Image (cartoon, rainbow, N blue to C red; front, side, top):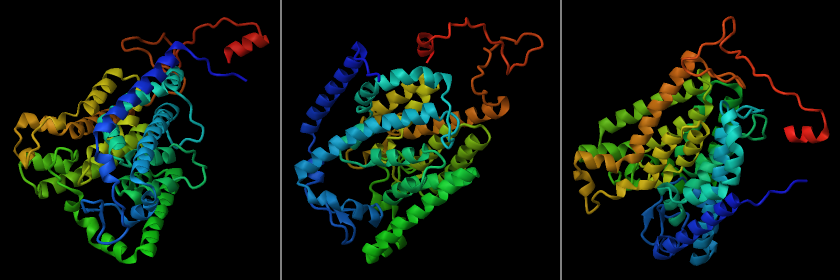
Length: 438
């Protein structure tokens, strides 16, 4: 049996995590939002209003039922549980994201995924640096806001990503995705993604997720019949109940159009843009899976599309930036990953004026600061389209066969996909050498 070796790098990673958690605790001490938010009991019925501010609930009745146990704890205890739980969920999301990006480079639905050379080379450093990645990830704006304000975005992304990276033969694959969609409707777009891929295993998972989602609706109707009828027939269509869609904190197409058009009602323009983006995003996701073999980008494109077309995508809902960064790092695109991480850490939309309706009067250059996540998502959709076109044109690289560098021609008579293997010195077949090779 082997035991992990304590190295200077591992000690530094743990030290960085402890320092980050200390800074987070100091920040939370000055931030009273979590205590205020959990200061009152959360009724599961009664016009769907929660907290002492009587805010309208925007999630399905199933979510209210699911979080009833939160009312059993005192406010300070609940605050501590939520903060610690979200930090642990971030650590889980880091592991899931790297499994998603590295072990499933071409197909998260594959039963026996094969690591790419890039992911295999980076697997050990990333496994060692999970504490360091958590320490850094805590200060990405979506993650930090989720932790401090007791949001559930990390839990939902973990549910979706865990379910999508399960083997095809796993019992009930798709069930967790349906539960996530039952708590918050945005993940429901992944069900359409699974069904549109056309693969038997993906369609089966999509049908399971759809059945799970319907089950959450039936449970809500059984426990809260009047409120369920009210929600699914009226409230679900009242997008204004979600909050001020024109606020800079809303990083969706509706927020972008409302601020750009200087109106609280973006109207037909926004509706058409959402419709086009939805169809284009699902088409691109399917193309990434079926034609290009880029299943990781199929999942990411679906997530970005769902966040863009949702009427309100608060900044804390963009915790999908964690698996996005993992994919970029696994592909060796360090500069792109650094630029994306900078955008999600800079909080530029908090630099624009917020007094009253000042966000509706922003000049053009402040519009860029007010919509960083939207612009990055649109750019990444374009990048994914370029990747798909390139993969379809040139074909995905064969497993274990590296591509020749640009400008280098294969030797005469040799196939470009069958490069000459260099001679490898044979080692003695002893137990020590065998263990060394392993």
